[in-house]
Amino acid sequence: MSKRNFKDIQDGTKAVWAGEKESLAYNATQVPVVLSVAYNYDDVDEWQEVAIGNKPGHIYNRMTNPTVQAFEEKVRILEGAEEAIAFSSGMAAISSTLYTFLRPGDRVISVKDTYGGTNKIFTEFLPNIDVDVTLCNTGNHEEIEAEVAKGCKVLYLESPTNPTMKITDIERMVRAAKSMGALVIIDNTFATPINQNPIQLEVDIVIHSATKFLSGHADALGGVVCGSKELMKRVYHYREINGATMDPWSAYLILRGMKTLKLRVRQQEKSAMEIAKYLQKQKLVEAVYYPGLETHPHHHIAKKQMKGFGGILSFVLKDEMEAIKILLPKLQYANKAGNLGAVETIYGPARTTSHVECTLEERKALGIPEGLVRISVGIEDTEDLISDLEQAFSLLESQLPVNSSK
Image 1: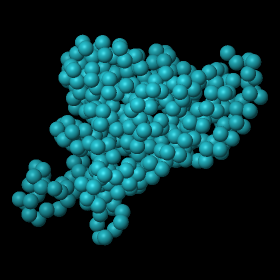
Image 2 (image 1 turned 60 degrees about the vertical axis):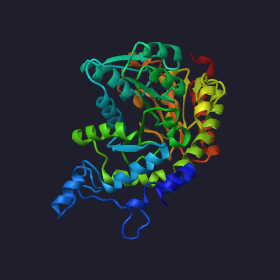
Image 3 (image 1 turned 30 degrees about the vertical axis):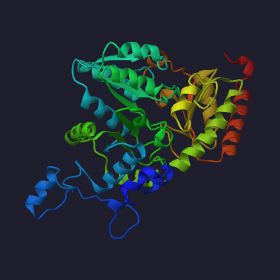
């Protein structure tokens, strides 16, 4: 299947076929894992042409690798980008992109409740190199626009946010940033290319933690950055020299996982909606955060810019950690772990997952309640996940009566 046909087919078909044909060998139907660190050239002139990029080929795995290249091409096509660059982890992709484009004296604007590791870059690492960082209240579009109007080099977004599931109007923020000549970068991990394609909304750079939904099986680390050829050339050069390259085995595992991406996401968000509705009825639950709920403050924005609402939600228990420590161990069909986007359902409080790097005071300042639990819904049958919650809440109420809750 040639590249020219991909624009005419659906995302599920792209997830299976995109980027693979050019990397097949020996009439195999699956992309091989190429582990060789270096590549041999008897012809020195050809070697030179490949090395300087005038001819396709591979020189050294820190630069390019056939298996990794197949993964990059699949993501590129799904996101509708000109180029994609793979990294060793999601945080490697995020940090490398920010360090590629920011210099001392530059100003970056973002929102307060980005993923905890990203937040640490904004609050700790970038200030150390004299980059001016302004973090706005997520969802306050007027505040973000006012700050952008003061001037900035980069506007960094995350929508939905991790773990509070807040939504930013991407088109509106892009208009504000472009009017000031700023670069717009977005973390699209939660939405996935199945539910949101920010490049179609004129975002410059899209980032994924490929460890999560793209992989889907919690067995490979990776990150990926997508954008124009011009911008990706700069990102590639930073990665080439700094070395946070994806290894070929991880690329193979993520490629394999991506073939079922659309199927997984559709089942996950089906269950997520039902779980969100169930949690809204629980007396020990203070709040439920899921953009698919009509009660979500930015449901109308999510409906406008997303094709589905995703497989992540979070809720707040009234008795905070006391209730969390009782409820989570009672769940039978859930891992309690610091990951998301896997085929298995995963539960975890923010203080041990998304914002483990932050102190209690920092989490409070970011608007993350101590009683918040994030659910990454798996592909299990919806009825079984609801039944599991029912028995866990029944046991919770027997140990922590509703009338004793705060």
